[in-house]
Length: 287
Image (cartoon, rainbow, N blue to C red; front, side, top):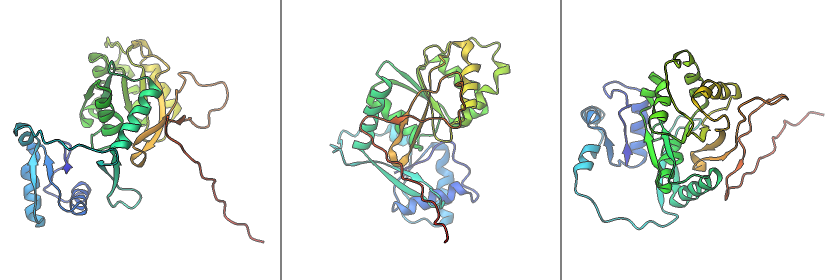
């Protein structure tokens, strides 16, 4: 099944997103496509123009209104649960296959590592076709049985202060973003004067998905300190689709150390995970 969201560009003209969709659809042997109602007509027109054979298309509203299916699959630990599409270095879509064991092991590990539980409220604004949106947040939170809040990515990027608005409104305890986003919100500090946010419930802010820059992370912490944001909540982490999302993290202190800080540590592997660093091979020297 291929799921498309409201952020999909127009299907009327050629684009990288449309090319990727067609490549994935053919690679997976013409699976069902589930779209938002507003995207259905554009997708059908695209399929007609491109002469896609055997199109199977439905919408989220149709699924929502259909009778409940009680014929549940009794999944085994090594059954496939997700295929996440990643372009890698070539630009061609590849499917990273994750099993129930992968997702549950990773969820249990971060629960133990970060003392997460059903009392938490999480906030994610990265698309659910991204490993961090669907695994690091949504499926983990289903496992925890906690409340989860999801916001559209373009809506947050249009005005990053909405991120803090939602955190305040829902008493959020856990959120995350790639490093660049922390700088986007901190840049809006001049607009914070009339805000009455209470961010004191926050206890885990994951910083993952790209290189972690300590200065940007700390600027975010310091900008929101007047609103009760604890200064020990930032956790740089490392992971990718192939590792079932983030599998390491540690605390970034709110204040820089007295010594040089050439890089930011992303911590040790989660319980149940192991990592090996391969030595760098230097080019052979001539005689």
